[in-house]
Image 1 (cartoon, one colour):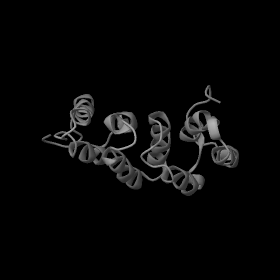
Image 2: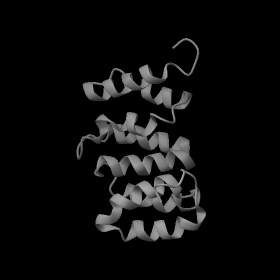
Image 3: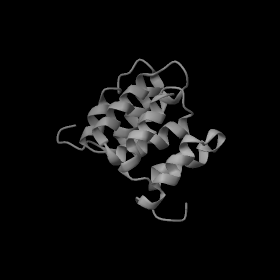
Length: 143
């Protein structure tokens, strides 16, 4: 499957969702496949799955789910990414979540979110935000 181009494959939705809910250790394989191939049809179930352990996922799993969410409900996903940056107790993923989730889908709304963290009290969060802005420049006039 990883050799296929990134595009929604509706015929995989049910299989991916079943495997997500029964994954246990296999979640490492399923989450990236959901990111690449699942349609918006299973988004509510994926969000429910994600929110059950929100803030305690391993970084790569959190990134895959948030990137999938971005593809299918960008405004809600941006709010979830902001929340992930502010959840600072269980893992260190908050340090890199901006760059990991937004680096290839940067737009004006992402820029607004990232700018909130440029002066963050956590230097790694602030650096992640600054790096994103340096890579993408301002999407609006007048930085």
